[in-house]
Amino acid sequence: MTPPTFDTPLSSDRRHKRLRLDLGPRAYDILIGQDVLGLAGAEIAQLGHKRCFVITDETVARYHLDALTASLDHNGIKVEALVLPAGERTKSLTQLEKLTNDLLEKKVDRHSLLIALGGGVIGDLTGFAAAVLLRGIDFVQVPTTLLAQVDSSVGGKTGVNSPHGKNLIGAFHQPRLVLADTEALSTLPRRELLAGYAEVVKYGLIDDPAFFHWLETHGHAVIDGDPVARLKAVHTSCAAKARIVAADERENGQRALLNLGHTFGHALEAETGYGDRLLHGEAVAIGMMMAFDFSVRLGLCPAEDAERLRRHTASLGLPTDPSQVPGQFFAPAALIEHMTRDKKVRDGRMTFILARGIGKAFITSEVNASDLQDFMTMTLAA
Image 1: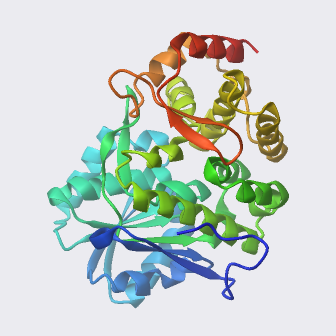
Image 2: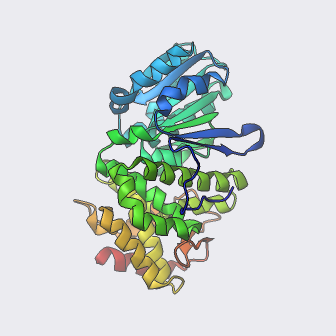
Protein backbone atom coordinates (compact mmCIF):
# COMPACT_ATOMS: atom_id res chain seq x y z
CA MET A 1 0.00 0.00 0.00
CA THR A 2 1.54 3.30 -1.10
CA PRO A 3 0.81 6.73 0.39
CA PRO A 4 -1.65 8.86 -1.62
CA THR A 5 -0.44 11.90 -3.52
CA PHE A 6 -1.56 15.39 -2.60
CA ASP A 7 -1.97 17.26 -5.88
CA THR A 8 -5.23 15.50 -6.80
CA PRO A 9 -8.33 14.41 -4.83
CA LEU A 10 -7.97 11.05 -3.12
CA SER A 11 -10.98 9.80 -5.11
CA SER A 12 -14.28 11.00 -6.50
CA ASP A 13 -15.96 10.29 -3.13
CA ARG A 14 -15.29 13.30 -0.93
CA ARG A 15 -17.23 11.89 2.04
CA HIS A 16 -15.84 8.39 2.63
CA LYS A 17 -12.67 6.37 2.13
CA ARG A 18 -12.26 2.65 2.72
CA LEU A 19 -8.91 0.96 3.39
CA ARG A 20 -8.09 -2.71 3.84
CA LEU A 21 -5.48 -3.76 6.39
CA ASP A 22 -4.20 -6.98 4.86
CA LEU A 23 -3.38 -9.50 7.57
CA GLY A 24 -4.62 -12.66 5.90
CA PRO A 25 -7.41 -14.22 8.00
CA ARG A 26 -7.26 -11.24 10.40
CA ALA A 27 -7.66 -8.60 7.65
CA TYR A 28 -10.24 -5.88 8.17
CA ASP A 29 -11.64 -2.69 6.69
CA ILE A 30 -11.12 0.85 7.90
CA LEU A 31 -13.99 3.13 6.90
CA ILE A 32 -13.29 6.85 7.24
CA GLY A 33 -15.50 9.88 6.62
CA GLN A 34 -18.61 11.85 7.41
CA ASP A 35 -21.65 10.23 9.09
CA VAL A 36 -19.87 6.91 9.53
CA LEU A 37 -21.73 6.53 12.85
CA GLY A 38 -24.94 6.43 10.83
CA LEU A 39 -23.51 3.62 8.71
CA ALA A 40 -22.18 1.67 11.70
CA GLY A 41 -25.15 -0.64 12.09
CA ALA A 42 -25.12 -1.75 8.47
CA GLU A 43 -21.34 -2.25 8.53
CA ILE A 44 -21.37 -4.20 11.78
CA ALA A 45 -24.35 -6.31 10.72
CA GLN A 46 -22.18 -7.78 7.95
CA LEU A 47 -19.96 -9.31 10.64
CA GLY A 48 -22.84 -11.57 11.68
CA HIS A 49 -23.12 -10.68 15.39
CA LYS A 50 -26.62 -10.31 16.84
CA ARG A 51 -25.64 -9.03 20.29
CA CYS A 52 -23.08 -6.38 21.14
CA PHE A 53 -21.83 -4.36 24.07
CA VAL A 54 -20.80 -0.75 23.49
CA ILE A 55 -17.99 0.33 25.80
CA THR A 56 -17.63 4.10 26.08
CA ASP A 57 -16.93 6.84 28.60
CA GLU A 58 -19.10 9.49 30.20
CA THR A 59 -17.97 12.29 27.90
CA VAL A 60 -18.28 10.40 24.61
CA ALA A 61 -21.64 8.90 25.61
CA ARG A 62 -23.21 12.36 25.78
CA TYR A 63 -22.29 13.11 22.18
CA HIS A 64 -22.30 9.85 20.24
CA LEU A 65 -23.86 6.90 22.07
CA ASP A 66 -27.44 7.55 20.92
CA ALA A 67 -26.43 7.78 17.25
CA LEU A 68 -24.51 4.52 17.41
CA THR A 69 -27.18 2.57 19.30
CA ALA A 70 -29.89 3.86 16.94
CA SER A 71 -27.91 2.61 13.95
CA LEU A 72 -27.38 -0.77 15.59
CA ASP A 73 -31.05 -1.06 16.59
CA HIS A 74 -32.13 -0.17 13.05
CA ASN A 75 -30.10 -3.10 11.77
CA GLY A 76 -31.52 -5.61 14.22
CA ILE A 77 -28.53 -5.82 16.54
CA LYS A 78 -29.27 -6.12 20.25
CA VAL A 79 -27.11 -3.60 22.12
CA GLU A 80 -26.19 -2.81 25.71
CA ALA A 81 -23.91 0.04 26.78
CA LEU A 82 -21.35 0.19 29.58
CA VAL A 83 -20.24 3.73 30.42
CA LEU A 84 -16.86 4.15 32.14
CA PRO A 85 -15.17 7.18 33.72
CA ALA A 86 -13.33 9.42 31.27
CA GLY A 87 -9.58 9.91 31.40
CA GLU A 88 -6.25 8.10 31.19
CA ARG A 89 -6.64 6.58 34.66
CA THR A 90 -9.42 4.37 33.28
CA LYS A 91 -6.72 2.51 31.35
CA SER A 92 -5.83 0.33 34.33
CA LEU A 93 -5.98 -3.22 35.61
CA THR A 94 -8.61 -2.09 38.12
CA GLN A 95 -10.95 -0.91 35.37
CA LEU A 96 -10.15 -3.97 33.24
CA GLU A 97 -11.20 -6.25 36.09
CA LYS A 98 -14.41 -4.29 36.65
CA LEU A 99 -15.25 -4.22 32.94
CA THR A 100 -14.68 -7.93 32.37
CA ASN A 101 -16.67 -8.85 35.47
CA ASP A 102 -19.54 -6.57 34.39
CA LEU A 103 -19.56 -8.21 30.96
CA LEU A 104 -19.51 -11.71 32.47
CA GLU A 105 -22.37 -10.70 34.75
CA LYS A 106 -24.30 -9.74 31.60
CA LYS A 107 -23.55 -13.22 30.18
CA VAL A 108 -21.23 -12.18 27.39
CA ASP A 109 -20.42 -15.18 25.18
CA ARG A 110 -18.04 -16.02 22.35
CA HIS A 111 -20.53 -14.82 19.75
CA SER A 112 -20.90 -11.42 21.43
CA LEU A 113 -19.21 -8.35 19.98
CA LEU A 114 -17.56 -5.55 21.93
CA ILE A 115 -17.63 -2.07 20.37
CA ALA A 116 -15.12 0.52 21.57
CA LEU A 117 -16.72 3.95 21.21
CA GLY A 118 -14.26 6.63 22.24
CA GLY A 119 -10.62 7.65 22.23
CA GLY A 120 -7.44 5.69 22.76
CA VAL A 121 -8.15 4.82 26.39
CA ILE A 122 -11.49 3.18 25.59
CA GLY A 123 -10.11 1.52 22.47
CA ASP A 124 -7.09 0.03 24.23
CA LEU A 125 -9.09 -1.12 27.27
CA THR A 126 -11.95 -2.61 25.24
CA GLY A 127 -9.54 -4.36 22.90
CA PHE A 128 -7.68 -5.90 25.81
CA ALA A 129 -10.96 -7.01 27.40
CA ALA A 130 -11.92 -8.64 24.08
CA ALA A 131 -8.52 -10.36 23.93
CA VAL A 132 -8.83 -11.97 27.35
CA LEU A 133 -12.58 -12.56 27.77
CA LEU A 134 -13.39 -16.22 27.12
CA ARG A 135 -9.89 -16.45 25.62
CA GLY A 136 -10.76 -14.02 22.86
CA ILE A 137 -13.89 -12.49 21.34
CA ASP A 138 -14.46 -10.04 18.48
CA PHE A 139 -14.45 -6.29 18.81
CA VAL A 140 -14.89 -3.21 16.63
CA GLN A 141 -13.16 0.13 16.97
CA VAL A 142 -15.29 3.28 16.63
CA PRO A 143 -12.70 5.99 17.41
CA THR A 144 -14.03 9.46 18.18
CA THR A 145 -10.77 11.39 18.72
CA LEU A 146 -8.23 12.38 16.10
CA LEU A 147 -5.49 10.49 17.96
CA ALA A 148 -7.52 7.28 18.02
CA GLN A 149 -8.63 7.62 14.40
CA VAL A 150 -5.11 7.99 13.03
CA ASP A 151 -3.22 5.75 15.42
CA SER A 152 -4.49 3.67 18.32
CA SER A 153 -7.61 2.19 16.66
CA VAL A 154 -5.57 0.61 13.85
CA GLY A 155 -3.11 -2.22 14.29
CA GLY A 156 -4.40 -4.38 17.13
CA LYS A 157 -2.33 -3.06 20.04
CA THR A 158 -4.43 -3.28 23.19
CA GLY A 159 -3.60 -2.90 26.86
CA VAL A 160 -3.49 -0.92 30.05
CA ASN A 161 -0.92 1.12 31.92
CA SER A 162 1.12 -0.04 34.90
CA PRO A 163 2.81 1.96 37.66
CA HIS A 164 5.99 0.81 35.91
CA GLY A 165 5.08 2.41 32.60
CA LYS A 166 2.61 2.96 29.79
CA ASN A 167 1.10 0.06 27.81
CA LEU A 168 3.24 -2.55 29.55
CA ILE A 169 0.31 -4.95 30.07
CA GLY A 170 -1.62 -5.95 26.98
CA ALA A 171 -1.98 -8.12 23.92
CA PHE A 172 -2.04 -7.95 20.15
CA HIS A 173 -5.71 -8.45 19.22
CA GLN A 174 -6.92 -7.11 15.89
CA PRO A 175 -10.40 -5.55 15.58
CA ARG A 176 -12.86 -6.88 13.01
CA LEU A 177 -13.56 -3.39 11.70
CA VAL A 178 -12.61 0.25 12.27
CA LEU A 179 -15.22 2.99 11.76
CA ALA A 180 -13.78 6.52 11.94
CA ASP A 181 -16.40 9.28 11.73
CA THR A 182 -14.58 12.53 10.99
CA GLU A 183 -17.66 14.53 12.01
CA ALA A 184 -17.15 13.29 15.57
CA LEU A 185 -14.00 15.41 15.71
CA SER A 186 -16.15 18.55 15.78
CA THR A 187 -17.06 17.80 19.41
CA LEU A 188 -13.41 17.81 20.56
CA PRO A 189 -11.75 20.70 22.39
CA ARG A 190 -8.89 22.25 20.41
CA ARG A 191 -6.37 20.82 22.87
CA GLU A 192 -7.56 17.26 22.14
CA LEU A 193 -7.43 17.90 18.40
CA LEU A 194 -3.88 19.15 18.66
CA ALA A 195 -2.89 16.13 20.73
CA GLY A 196 -4.15 13.88 17.95
CA TYR A 197 -2.51 16.01 15.29
CA ALA A 198 0.90 15.16 16.74
CA GLU A 199 0.33 11.56 15.63
CA VAL A 200 -0.62 12.80 12.15
CA VAL A 201 2.67 14.70 11.90
CA LYS A 202 4.50 11.53 12.93
CA TYR A 203 3.63 9.77 9.66
CA GLY A 204 5.26 12.52 7.63
CA LEU A 205 8.36 12.41 9.80
CA ILE A 206 8.76 8.62 9.53
CA ASP A 207 8.94 8.14 5.76
CA ASP A 208 6.70 10.60 3.90
CA PRO A 209 8.28 14.06 3.55
CA ALA A 210 5.63 15.02 0.94
CA PHE A 211 2.93 14.52 3.57
CA PHE A 212 4.84 16.64 6.09
CA HIS A 213 5.12 19.38 3.45
CA TRP A 214 1.36 19.13 2.84
CA LEU A 215 0.74 19.47 6.59
CA GLU A 216 2.91 22.59 6.73
CA THR A 217 0.43 24.15 4.30
CA HIS A 218 -2.84 22.51 5.38
CA GLY A 219 -2.36 21.63 9.04
CA HIS A 220 -4.37 24.60 10.26
CA ALA A 221 -7.26 23.51 8.03
CA VAL A 222 -7.17 20.05 9.60
CA ILE A 223 -7.40 21.55 13.09
CA ASP A 224 -9.97 24.19 12.12
CA GLY A 225 -12.42 21.63 10.75
CA ASP A 226 -12.13 21.64 6.98
CA PRO A 227 -13.83 18.32 6.07
CA VAL A 228 -11.70 17.61 2.98
CA ALA A 229 -8.45 18.32 4.84
CA ARG A 230 -9.54 16.15 7.76
CA LEU A 231 -10.51 13.28 5.50
CA LYS A 232 -7.18 13.48 3.69
CA ALA A 233 -5.18 13.65 6.94
CA VAL A 234 -6.96 10.70 8.56
CA HIS A 235 -6.93 8.60 5.39
CA THR A 236 -3.24 9.20 4.74
CA SER A 237 -2.32 8.42 8.34
CA CYS A 238 -4.36 5.21 8.41
CA ALA A 239 -2.94 4.13 5.03
CA ALA A 240 0.59 4.64 6.35
CA LYS A 241 -0.09 2.71 9.52
CA ALA A 242 -1.89 -0.09 7.67
CA ARG A 243 1.08 -0.50 5.34
CA ILE A 244 3.54 -0.77 8.24
CA VAL A 245 1.36 -3.08 10.35
CA ALA A 246 0.67 -5.40 7.39
CA ALA A 247 4.44 -5.85 7.02
CA ASP A 248 5.18 -6.25 10.76
CA GLU A 249 2.08 -7.04 12.80
CA ARG A 250 3.79 -7.79 16.12
CA GLU A 251 6.49 -5.12 16.08
CA ASN A 252 9.45 -7.37 15.49
CA GLY A 253 11.01 -4.85 13.13
CA GLN A 254 9.89 -1.79 11.22
CA ARG A 255 6.63 -1.31 13.12
CA ALA A 256 8.74 0.16 15.91
CA LEU A 257 9.08 3.25 13.68
CA LEU A 258 5.54 4.11 14.73
CA ASN A 259 6.98 4.80 18.18
CA LEU A 260 8.81 7.92 16.97
CA GLY A 261 8.67 10.34 19.91
CA HIS A 262 7.18 7.75 22.25
CA THR A 263 10.31 6.70 24.15
CA PHE A 264 10.80 10.25 25.39
CA GLY A 265 7.06 10.96 25.49
CA HIS A 266 6.08 7.94 27.58
CA ALA A 267 8.74 8.87 30.13
CA LEU A 268 7.25 12.36 30.41
CA GLU A 269 3.76 10.89 30.82
CA ALA A 270 4.90 8.48 33.51
CA GLU A 271 6.55 11.26 35.46
CA THR A 272 3.37 13.38 35.35
CA GLY A 273 1.24 10.44 36.50
CA TYR A 274 -0.79 10.03 33.28
CA GLY A 275 -3.01 12.95 34.20
CA ASP A 276 -4.52 15.91 32.37
CA ARG A 277 -1.39 17.99 32.90
CA LEU A 278 0.14 16.29 29.86
CA LEU A 279 -1.98 14.55 27.23
CA HIS A 280 -0.54 11.60 25.33
CA GLY A 281 -0.37 13.49 22.05
CA GLU A 282 1.30 16.44 23.73
CA ALA A 283 3.91 14.09 25.17
CA VAL A 284 4.44 12.61 21.70
CA ALA A 285 4.87 16.12 20.23
CA ILE A 286 7.57 16.93 22.79
CA GLY A 287 9.07 13.46 22.37
CA MET A 288 9.34 13.81 18.59
CA MET A 289 11.04 17.16 19.00
CA MET A 290 13.45 15.62 21.51
CA ALA A 291 14.16 12.74 19.10
CA PHE A 292 15.01 15.20 16.34
CA ASP A 293 17.09 17.42 18.66
CA PHE A 294 18.95 14.33 19.93
CA SER A 295 19.56 13.26 16.33
CA VAL A 296 20.98 16.71 15.56
CA ARG A 297 23.22 16.54 18.63
CA LEU A 298 24.54 13.15 17.48
CA GLY A 299 25.31 14.57 14.04
CA LEU A 300 22.69 12.44 12.32
CA CYS A 301 20.11 15.04 11.27
CA PRO A 302 20.35 18.50 9.70
CA ALA A 303 19.51 21.21 12.23
CA GLU A 304 17.20 22.87 9.70
CA ASP A 305 14.94 19.81 9.65
CA ALA A 306 14.56 19.93 13.41
CA GLU A 307 13.74 23.62 13.13
CA ARG A 308 11.07 22.91 10.49
CA LEU A 309 9.42 20.49 12.90
CA ARG A 310 9.67 22.98 15.77
CA ARG A 311 8.18 25.82 13.68
CA HIS A 312 5.29 23.74 12.42
CA THR A 313 4.20 22.20 15.71
CA ALA A 314 4.67 25.47 17.62
CA SER A 315 2.66 27.41 15.01
CA LEU A 316 -0.36 25.27 15.84
CA GLY A 317 0.10 25.54 19.59
CA LEU A 318 1.61 22.16 20.39
CA PRO A 319 4.32 22.03 23.07
CA THR A 320 7.86 21.41 21.82
CA ASP A 321 9.82 21.33 25.08
CA PRO A 322 9.45 19.67 28.52
CA SER A 323 9.61 23.11 30.14
CA GLN A 324 6.17 23.82 28.65
CA VAL A 325 4.48 21.23 30.86
CA PRO A 326 2.83 23.34 33.56
CA GLY A 327 3.88 22.88 37.16
CA GLN A 328 6.34 20.10 36.45
CA PHE A 329 10.09 19.76 36.96
CA PHE A 330 11.70 16.84 35.15
CA ALA A 331 14.92 15.34 36.49
CA PRO A 332 17.12 13.64 33.86
CA ALA A 333 17.70 10.55 36.02
CA ALA A 334 13.98 10.05 36.61
CA LEU A 335 13.12 10.23 32.91
CA ILE A 336 15.96 7.92 31.93
CA GLU A 337 14.79 5.42 34.55
CA HIS A 338 11.32 5.44 32.97
CA MET A 339 12.92 4.94 29.55
CA THR A 340 14.73 1.82 30.74
CA ARG A 341 11.28 0.28 31.38
CA ASP A 342 10.06 0.98 27.85
CA LYS A 343 8.61 -2.08 26.13
CA LYS A 344 11.13 -1.71 23.30
CA VAL A 345 14.07 -2.44 25.64
CA ARG A 346 15.90 -5.59 24.52
CA ASP A 347 18.58 -7.37 26.52
CA GLY A 348 18.87 -4.31 28.74
CA ARG A 349 19.49 -1.93 25.82
CA MET A 350 17.11 0.93 25.07
CA THR A 351 15.77 1.21 21.53
CA PHE A 352 15.37 4.67 20.04
CA ILE A 353 13.61 5.96 16.95
CA LEU A 354 15.86 8.71 15.63
CA ALA A 355 15.98 10.61 12.33
CA ARG A 356 18.40 11.49 9.56
CA GLY A 357 15.94 14.12 8.44
CA ILE A 358 12.22 14.65 7.81
CA GLY A 359 10.88 11.41 6.35
CA LYS A 360 14.03 9.51 7.32
CA ALA A 361 13.34 7.90 10.70
CA PHE A 362 15.27 4.80 11.74
CA ILE A 363 15.54 2.36 14.63
CA THR A 364 18.69 2.02 16.71
CA SER A 365 19.88 0.52 19.97
CA GLU A 366 23.37 1.97 19.49
CA VAL A 367 22.96 4.99 21.75
CA ASN A 368 25.74 5.77 24.17
CA ALA A 369 24.49 6.22 27.74
CA SER A 370 26.69 9.26 28.31
CA ASP A 371 25.36 10.92 25.14
CA LEU A 372 21.81 10.39 26.38
CA GLN A 373 22.66 11.70 29.85
CA ASP A 374 24.31 14.84 28.41
CA PHE A 375 21.39 15.48 26.08
CA MET A 376 18.79 15.07 28.81
CA THR A 377 20.72 17.32 31.18
CA MET A 378 21.06 20.02 28.53
CA THR A 379 17.42 19.77 27.41
CA LEU A 380 15.90 19.82 30.87
CA ALA A 381 18.11 22.67 32.03
CA ALA A 382 17.05 24.89 29.13
